[in-house]
Amino acid sequence: MNIFFDQGVPAPLRTYMSEYSVDTAFEKGWHQLKNGDLLNHVEQSHYDIFITTDQNLKYQQSLAHRKVSIIVLSTTSWPKIKLETRLIIEAVNRANSNSFEEIIIGA
Image (cartoon, rainbow, N blue to C red; front, side):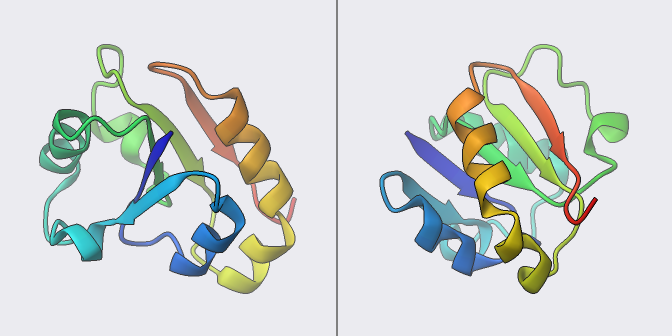
């Protein structure tokens, strides 16, 4: 499974996803792309899951015809996310084509 981290997703999260292939926006040089262009690049590069911290994504983009699964984290804070990695891994394992899930961290 190929996973793509948007700019706000803490890179240390990838250590909890060692069985997956994980790339980041910065590594790919896509950190300056806006959401629509970024999602297009992600899909064209055949990523299965797009993980972001942009909670407005579902309001800014039409997600109905996207092939990539999207997981939205409610914070960029690594200390908070680190405590909830189990929730994120479970969401990754549940994801299927064109799924969308928001994970509230620290709720």
